[in-house]
Length: 307
Image (tube, rainbow, N blue to C red; front, side):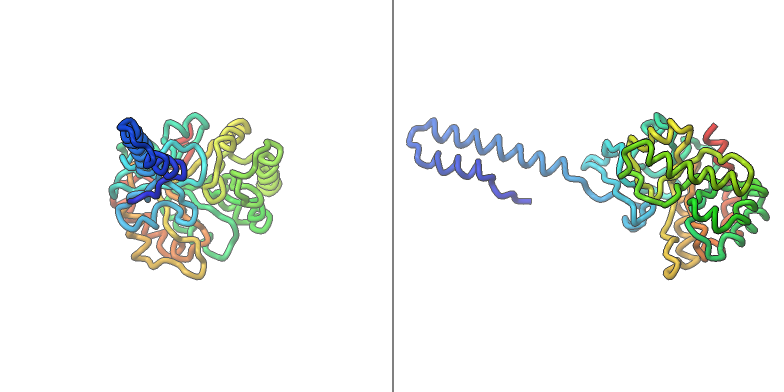
């Protein structure tokens, strides 16, 4: 890739052209070399490239929210904030996140478990209800699976019976904030805390129980200070290592597409993110759980990872 010379370099060259002594040419050479190679280094090494994926790169993680970048050497960029993103290097293997397990652990945060055992953790995000949660719960009950539902505050208000059913059938209800905002833009503890505690209060009113302090940032958007604030409030933060585009209500994926992603990319220690609003998820849940079980996977509650 060719780069235009800077104004500084251009002026230097013009100046040197008027010099007659050999030293002028020497300085010209040295100046061009230093500035030219410096510019090449910066443009060649600091610009991010698209993440590597085992299929389409647009399918990494929650697509609308991915901002994961790799350096040219393939190493994970040093990033402690932004939008959660994944890079799938190989099917069946844990993808790289835009923060490592070790970096997240400082804030009691997770995106997968470092294990070779065939265990996975099933989670759902619930922002509203459209009739698909009940069949999902039916399938989970049939397979005796305990999942975690990350719900917004308005969902608790509008669907108290479903919330109570989740609790009664052994599922965990986690905190997805009240208004589903971009939490990375919230810098003060008071505002952050209100988004969280309002959900806790609604859950207590509906169930009579304290909410389990599991938190998922809306859209996966977070900052380092957010993670610290969640930790100070006693929360564990959960991202994910497997998801697919299932949230467009009027453009649902086909069964075959869902199985391609959810079976092909499942891996030991996966935290799976699905949306309970998905009619595809509702339709395939029984068969999906069966197929995971046939692959030898144990579906465990998040509490086993968090403890």
